[in-house]
Each structure stands twice: as structure tokens, then as C-alpha cells.
Image 1: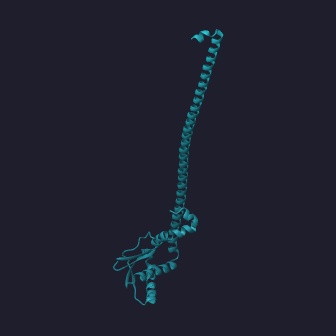
Image 2 (image 1 turned 30 degrees about the horizontal axis):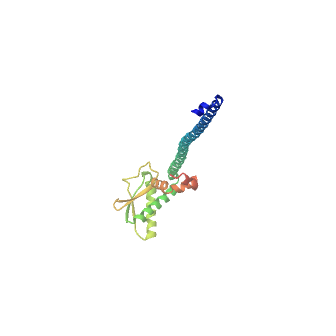
Image 3 (image 1 turned 60 degrees about the vertical axis):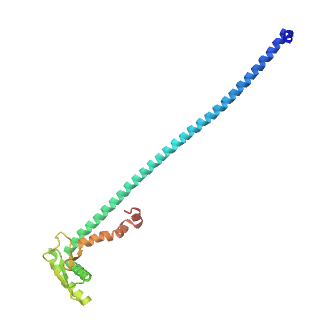
Length: 231
């Protein structure tokens, strides 16, 4: 206390000035430290928010991209399926027209060429005789074909005997004719009617539609296209 009282006013003022400057400096440094700390925390928080937003945007973009990609695939698949169905439908229509035209021409050819039809009936009778290999067989035909069929039966019996040395008897079942709307051909039955061989033109054409269809498609549409639009 004696020293303080001993200091002059100028000395006291100087000391106060130094203390004020020191306090000021401490305050500035503290403020700077706080500011730097705040900037650092702000930068960390900003970076965190940026990463979160970036991740959210990326996730949203990826989700939308997947949705768009899936939608595109569905659209492409739908268009492809529709195109495929149209092609298959057009091909089936062509095949149906082809077989229908064949049926029409088949019926006309029977009426126009009785001689060739008689040869066909003979061969159909022989086929049934060889397959059933029985002494007595019954033959069904359209009433309109009875004349041609009777001649075919006689010729078939002769050929059968020449080829096998066996007697084979074919009897035309006039009481049970084939429908007049059919295209021709015959049906042969044996073993008292329990076994029947359908050699009508309708049945032969039906078998052709089934068995020869892959070959017909390959001829009409090409092998590569047939595999590409296989149904």
C-alpha cells in the first residue's frame, strides 16, 4: 500500500493502461479462438449436411433411375410381346388359310379326277389291309364315292393277294356311310369294329397339320425366324 501511495499519478495511469491493454489482448485472443472454433464447427456441420444431402440426392436419383429403367424394360417387353403376338397371329392366319385352301382344292380334285382318286382309294384300302392283317374288313365311304370305292376294293384285294399270298376280303358298309360333307377317303375297321383305321382325307390333313407343321413353318418363315418366334 505504501508503494502504491508512493506512485505518482502518471505511473498509476501507465499501469492501468498496461493492464487494460493486457486484458484487451486476452479478450481479442479469446474472441479469435472462439471464432476459429466456431468456424471449425461450422465447417464440420456444413460438411456433414452436404454429405447427408448428397447421399439423399444420390439415393433419390438411384431410385428414380431404377424406376425409369424398370419402366423402360416393361415398356420394351410389352411392345416386344405385342409385336410377337401380332407376328404369331398373322402366321397362324396364314397357316389356317393355307390348310383351308388345301381342303377346298382336295375336294375339287376328288370330283375332277376320278381315275386318280380311284388309285388313292386302292392304296388306302391296301394300307388298312396291311396294318390290320385280317381276312375280313369293313370299309366306310361317302355314298357319292361308292362306285369308285367298290372298284378300289377289288383292285386292293388283288394286289394284297399278289403281295402276301393271303386272301383278304373288304366289304363296303353301305348302311353306315361317311358324312357327305367330308372330302373323301375311307375308313377301315376290323375285329368286329373294335379297331378302326381312319384313312379319310380330313384325318390325313389333320395329321399333316400336326406332324408336318414344323417343316411347313420352316419353309414358309425360315428356320431362324421360326426359332425366334417359337410358340
